[in-house]
Length: 68
Image 1 (cartoon, rainbow, N blue to C red):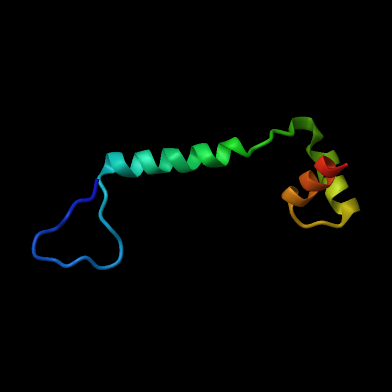
Image 2 (cartoon, one colour):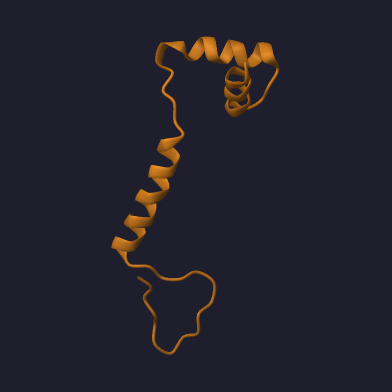
């Protein structure tokens, strides 16, 4: 929900209520969390494989593994 300040034209950012900010932040977190994988103790192996493959991103490692 946008909050308008009387007598001011809109410039730049839109002022949002606290509840709207929280709602939007929660939606962003949910989108990020959907793509997360918890490696736990296998993190060192993941880093080693990433280096061995010579790729820079974790997404690239995942793509190589999925395409096998």
